[in-house]
Length: 359
Ligand SMILES: Nc1ncnc2c1ncn2[C@@H]1O[C@H](COP(=O)(O)OP(=O)(O)OP(=O)(O)O)[C@@H](O)[C@H]1O
Ligand SMILES: [Mg+2]
Image (cartoon, rainbow, N blue to C red; front, top):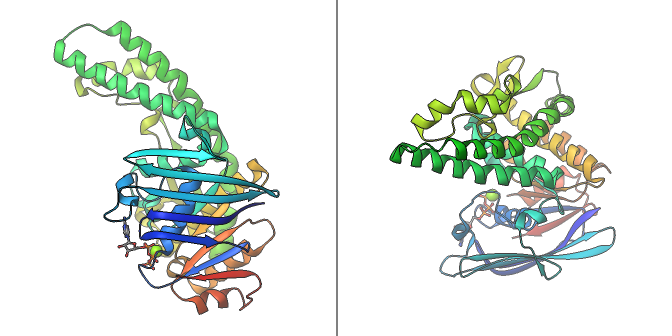
């Protein structure tokens, strides 16, 4: 099992300097609003993903009026301890595993898998397509380093292609030969991403369904539809078909960078017609299904970071969720709440199973 044994934070968000030791499989983090519970979860997330769950602006992770931060985690798996260190120093980031710095941070992804469930996750349903792609990409990247490599390469070429489209518009030059080279590269990296996205959903949806029914305590049909033009048209052909349009817009209008997922509840779009409670249940089902898939793939359970679940779910659903994460299939779980007594009560007042950390 993967366990975080210890984490030390220096100048990370609200923490000038702080060390936490984790002894149990279930760790409760309690404290008042603004006391740093979410930030601690985010620090754990950071050590797994080399970035914050909440922001891509590194400056926001640095403690006010200081210039950098350092996070160190001691992670244990099958009795072997690994040290992960992430630092930001003079604006430069470094990530090291056992004192060995990575050339590419992407190499770190998937070593220490984790799933975060946080209040803002509603954006996955309510927000724009980039929110859903981000969620799916983070998931698939943890399953396969190849996926992440293709995705990074694709995005790089996309920027170059868009740059070229701009140059063509500005200079009026014929650059079709170069455009064709970019197109070939986009296709080469785009197809594996497309296939991974498409193939992933079929076995995934029944898991979401089962978890939704379990959490909601009743059956409603959930569905996820993958929306990509590549389902209907060959990617090379798509790029050629859109070439004139792309030249006018000066950007690449069609491709896997515009893919989307549609979430449905009893055949209706969740975004517009599901109730808040239904959306919450679905999000938990989605994230827990993600947890299961990663667990199955890695042959060990990921870390589960549960932020503010008591604010989000009603008592019955919380009880079912707790029952689930207590089962042996689950790994280390971090769970925040403003009320220590409520959290302990959710675990039947059993202080042996849960370690409580008060901020
Ligand atoms: N870069 C930073 N430097 C210093 N303090 C920060 C920084 N970023 C956030 N904070 C502070 O961290 C606190 C928020 O911490 P966090 O979100 O972890 O609280 P919380 O315990 O989860 O609260 P809640 O119960 O409301 O969710 C705020 O007081 C905020 O001002
Ligand atoms: Mg919080």
